[in-house]
Length: 165
Image (tube, rainbow, N blue to C red):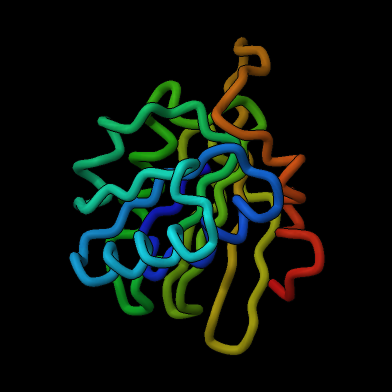
């Protein structure tokens, strides 16, 4: 799984706790990366994860790809989320067929229903917060394998089982 704008790493660590085999965390802030490292050590998941201290857009082409799950929880007032989703959708091999992308954002930011091969499957609003779910469908490509199985992690277009998303 891929956790972009990882912050404390809580979303990716939750996916690891639900069965994800591997997590790549991308976070630009040095202090937040230290927090992620600490949290991975504390939870015992560090052997199953890598923390990338880098800009998301610059890092996407360098990642191993073949993710079943991509989580984005950018800063609330961040502009450019459309550009990030475009980059995710256009990078061949980043997401497997039927992979899920989940983006949290402000209700003031209107995201499109499609970005290339990403199609919105759910749009949920909670006060000022919105969570959009996308599925990756690449016509002509069959299912592929990845570091982890999103299904085993209890994650689908409805979000993690038992999570109040």
